[in-house]
Length: 291
Image (tube, rainbow, N blue to C red; front, side, top):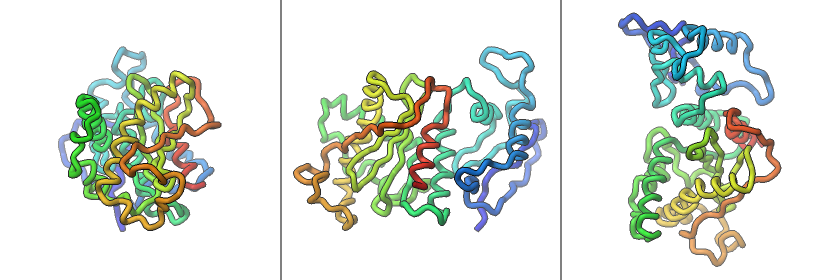
């Protein structure tokens, strides 16, 4: 099976308007390095050279590259087409936060890795930016209605997404055990990782910047998912398809299935002092996938 991974690294000069043939690589996902093994140093060096080419020698406010050097031939990652080199610079250096496209691309290929890596025994699927947007919009309507559940229709796009009807994330949730959910904190350069685990009826939250005030923000950010996902799991017949979930155990017993999911803050995780460390949530997910 051949899959389009990305266009080859170059200097970033896109002055020519001629069409460039796409290159195909015999890889299903780029995360093919074994856990604990350093990636190829030559590849890392080449990426650094690519990122650094065309930058201003003296930093300028709001600009990293000379204008003609920022635009590049499109790199295709899943359903994202990256046309500015600044996107890669953000990955390689601190000082700028990851945006939704960075997270979507990373999780797209993690989804591929989970699907094809024979060393992964757990079953996962992931979400993307569209799901996060739909949750925010619907939850805002829910709050504006004074928490009236009438505003949450059973046939909402979120329900179709969970059924696997959305092409980039087309795995039905009833066929997996876990759904990792990346959540960006409003007004902060920080992403946390929520992992929805159906048997626990819970969203486990992995955060590398714990603290009393910070935890309150985390719960506020996770609550829309806890409320809406529980509602749609109940309304879409999810539990009728999951004979391995014991609805009589203490996690489910005496609770309506549509009640909000529990939110569990995972303790004893490595902590960071500021938000400039960008990939902690991804590292947490890699550990969860393999162990």
